[in-house]
Image 1: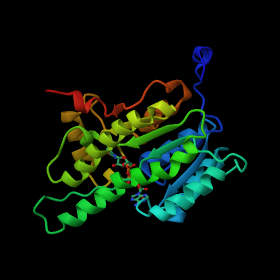
Image 2: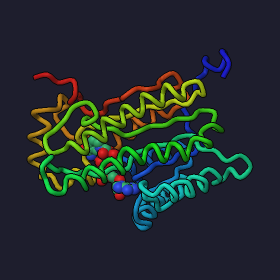
Image 3: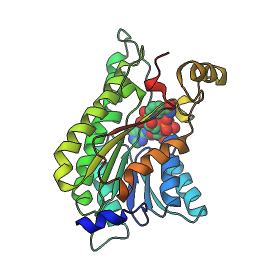
Length: 265
Ligand code: NAD
């Protein structure tokens, strides 16, 4: 970009090729729908083709552009193949990816002395941290072809604090922040921005088993905005970091948590 380009920074992601992992539910699904609404071409990826297909259908019904891929983020071979296909999608002459959103996640509540701890640790780190490195490595050659390359990694309030019986999840989410900051420095000279988003408590598949009254009580006590957030509110945070106009924001952790992490009393 030259100096005059900064006078008219674009707030459009129209025709940008956007990959979202874990996009069949919750935050990933809302993010896929929002990017499509903004004119992006959205690659919806998740476990289970039927679930992926349902989101693609929703987007198509709303006149958006989306295509679905069944993808387990712990399968590095599949990631490489699927990303190669996505990069070619509509761009056969010059394959590219503009935005990668690393969103797939699982919750595993396991005490440190639980007999299943090792499995919870391995799975949490594999899905929520190692996978982000695998997808970034697969996307990088194609992000390098983009005019506005963006990597956005989903962390959590657990990326800056901790909860009992959540150490595997918390370690993964802290790791996401470290990965984001290090890569922001490493890839900065190529103009690739790398940022993280830290959701607070959000109404999604991950939290649906928590009884409503517990959610209300928790939010009143811990969240300045006094409620759980909605996945669409997260999606807007992700979109903001993906805009061409967000070209000078990198290595940032954007908390979308109703103020939870800054509350002292
Ligand atoms: P969700 O359960 O609604 O969605 C998570 C999606 O990830 C699911 O569709 C699931 O199939 C997918 N997924 C799980 N394992 C996968 C794998 N191996 N490969 C591909 N996809 C896989 O939950 P959500 O709340 O929308 O979670 C999205 C992200 O937000 C996660 O990284 C989560 O840790 C984070 N987060 C959520 C909250 C919250 O309160 N909901 C809070 C903080 C952080």
